[in-house]
Image (cartoon, rainbow, N blue to C red; front, side):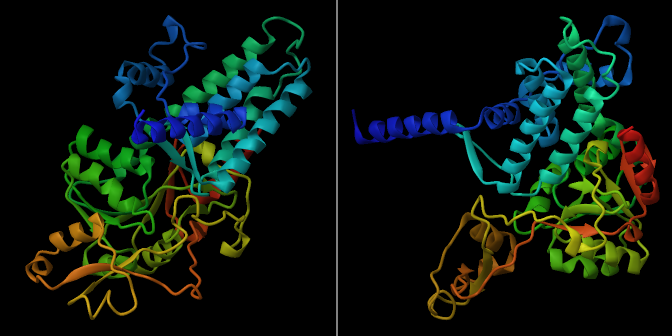
Length: 425
C-alpha cells in the first residue's frame, strides 16, 4: 500500500468515525440535505392529480434527480421530524410531542453552532449560523400542524401514526411548493424594462426573477450586491446571467450610489425570518438597503415562505437573538483584497502576499489593470490585536417594507401578525 493509499484509508476511517459520532437526528438531517428526494405519495391519489400542490409534486418528481433543486434546510428538517414519528416508541400523544421537540432542539442547536459537517467523502455542509430562525419556525409550525386537534386520534390504534404521517406529508408538500406559488404572485411586479436590485443569495428571489424572464419572457435588468463575506450575490448572479438577464454585480457599499446613479425601479430581497411585527431578518446589509430605498422612494419587496414566519418580536437590531459568528467555514476574518504596484509597496511591507484564483480573476476582469504588469493582488493581513466584526444577519423594521410576497399571497407587513395567528390556530 502506497503512502497516498494509506492516507486515503485513514481519511475514510476518520470520516466513518465522525458519521458514527453524529447524533442520529443530525445524521438524518445531513442525509436529506445531500439528496433531492421525491415527494412522498402518502397523501396523494389519482383524483388529486390536478390539485395545485400535487401538480407541483408531479412536476418535481418528473424532473431528473440531478436537476432537482436542493431541499431547503427547513423542509429537510421537517422530513427528519417525519422520521421521528416513524421511529418513536411513544404510546401517547404527549410522549410523541416530547420526542418531536427533542429532535427540533437538537437541530436548532446544531444550526446555531454551525460549522462544516462531512456527510460523505466529498460533501460538506456549512450552516453558517444563519438558518436557525427559519429552522426553528418551521419545526414549530410542523409540530403544531401535525398534533393540533389530535385529541380525537386514538394513540392505540394501528392507523394512529399513519394519520399523523399523512398530515405531515401534506405539510412537506405544501412547503416544497411554496417557491412556485410565491413566484407566481410576485413576478407580475417585475415589469418590462425595469431594473431590479437584489441582495444576498435567495432561492425564492431567484425563482421570481427566473419566472419573469423565462416563463413570462420579460426583459429587465438585475443589479446584484456582492454579498460579503460569502459573495452570495455574486454567486446567484450566475443563474441570472445563464437565463439571459442583463446582470451587474456591485459592491455592497455602493448600494446608495447605484440606486441614485442608475434608475432602480424596485428592490427585491429574501428573508431568513419574518417576525410578528412585519419586519424581516435577512443577510447583513438588508437593513441599510431598506433605509436607502425608503429615502429614495424605491419600493422594497420581500419574498419569503410562510414557514419562515416566526413569533419573534424584535424592535431593533439590539433585540435580535444571538446568531453567532461565521466561524465554521473560515469566515471569522475578512479576506480584503488590494493591489500593489510592486511587491515592495504592498505585500512586502510586513504582509504576506497571497495570490488567489479570485484575485487573479479580478485583475483579469479589470481590463486596464491586466495591462499593468507590475500590479499584483494580495490579501491585507490584519494584526492579531485587531478584532473583526462579521454579523451574519440584521433586522429590517416593517416601516421600510412595501409588500411581502408569500405562498399565502401578497401581504402588507401589518398583516403578518394575523397570518401567524391563523398558522398557529
